[in-house]
Structures are given as C-alpha cells and as structure tokens.
Length: 381
Image (tube, rainbow, N blue to C red):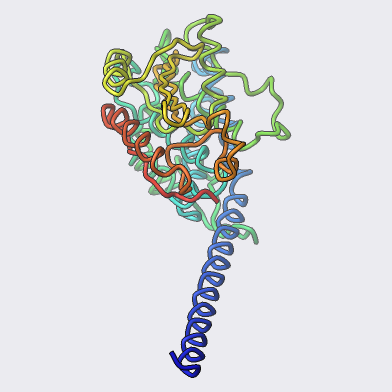
C-alpha cells in the first residue's frame, strides 16, 4: 500500500472515529438532560402526593380503628355530611395528584430513573387494591381503575402557582361542586358508594386495610428519611389482629428486599407449582423466614443461582432472583469487576452466557404465573 493510500485510510478512520465519538457524546448528554428533566418534574409532585397519601391513610386508620364514619353518621346532619364529604375528597384528592403525576411525567419513564421503579410499583399496587374484583374483599371502596383516572381528571383545575400550571381541587371547591350541577357531581356516584360502604356497621374492612397498608408503603418511599411525618402517625392497620412472629418476619424481610421481579396477589397455594418448576430445573429447596429459597450451583464455575419466593400474610407472592459470584472470583481480574450479586437482567458481557441461562429458567417460573418476563441488556442508570 502506498504512503498516500495509507494516509488517506488513516485520515478516513480518524474522521469516522471523531464522528462516532461526537455522536455518542451528544446522545449521552441528551439522555442526561432528559433524565434530569424527569427527576425535576417528579420532585415537583412528590410533596403534594405524599401529603395526599398520608391524609388518606390517616382517615382510613380513623375509620377502622376509631369508627370515624359510623360515629358521625349518627351525629348531627352537618357532622355526618362532613364525615362523608371529607372522606370522599381525601380519596379523590389522591386520585387527582396521581393523575397529575401521570400527565406531567411519562409513567413508563419514571421507572428508569434511579429508585423510582419502586414508586411505580407502589402506585400500581394501590390502584390494583381499589380495583380488585376479588369477592373476598367485598364491595367496600371498590372503584374501577378507569373510574379512578376519571375522578383524578375531574379533580384537576388551573393553578396560578409558578411551579405548577395545574393543581388539584381543594376541599371547599370540591364541596361546592358537589352541591351544584357541575361535571364532577355527575360522576361522583361510585365515589359516594365507596365511602358509604365503609360506614355500614360491622362492615368487612379487608380492602380498606390493604389500601391503608399500601399507602403507608408509598409514604415510606416518598418520605424515606421520615422528615415529613413521624413514625407513630404512619402505623399500619393489622390484617387480622396482631401478626405472629413468623408473619411479621415475612413482611419485614419482604419489605427489605431489592426490587422484585414479580410482586402480585395470589389467593391460592403457590408452592406446589413452584416446587414442580424447581424440580424440573434442578433447584434445591430450603425454608426461609420469608418463604422458600431455591438454589443451584454451577459445578464448572461455582456460581450460585438463587430464587427467593415469599408468600406474605396479605396473599402477595414476591419473586426475586440473583446470581452469587463465586468466592474465588476476586482472584481473577475480569471476574473481580463483577458485582457480588448479579441480577438476571444484568447487561454486562462477562457473565452473559451464565446470566442468559438463569434468566431463561427464571422466566419459565414467571410465565407460569402469567407475570411479565425479564428482558436482557437493560442498562441501569
């Protein structure tokens, strides 16, 4: 090859490298700006959302522990009206802030930013509890998910606040709307039924208890340093009297786990199906305080594959899988950089072959319960 051809080739390669490098840099900067914008918008609605969640869970606590509604239903007309109407507003207010968060921050984008995946799961769980048609939960507080969103939309009003152009209707405006012929009063029937159902003597409050507990979980995410609300005001209602030590340990460990790969309510007995899966793929089983642990070790590498399954007292099934780096890994340079616990969606190339097989087998378990499958190559920001 002549000197001229070599020079031309070198120059071309340098130009291509510069273009590609610049493109990647601009793309990374654009993604960083987008992430910052999402976080900024999310923070804008964090405070009112956590306040709405706190106020609603406190009212549910009062309704169930202090007979708030039934006590005031037998009081004066003004007191009875306030008890019902204010409870309606607290529920509608929560729907409003949730809907506003959906609008301002693309819901799917939130889950890709930091720890906000837990926030998305918590909000979805609250909606599912209110929407759940399970007859064991009864008619109390039952509102379809579409109706939840419709109520949230109806609660939104224009705002003169410089931070937010839209806000959620206050109690006075809400009460005025109910008294008039406005669009909210025409759609309030389901909300009215939901609240009145809690005032029935000896009502089954299972759904309300699950909702109050889920709201406390949401508050713990939004106010994790407990700077806004003291601990004694965010107590969870017991599911059915005091929990046993084993049940309390289950819930405590389940809450301490990293983000699970599946978290869903299952009213039946899950263990027989899970045991069949474990036997088919060669996992051994051991009991844990939170449920069961299924594990298998690769003889060739010493890598341990672990799937923890917890079945909580409130019928939640939580599935979390990870790979444990072998003890000798730090002695090998390329393995030393691998994290001690490797999730099945880990995008790194060093353990790609091992992760792929583990992910495939774990996805079979998720498929058995009709859960979303784990995808590969999802970068963690």
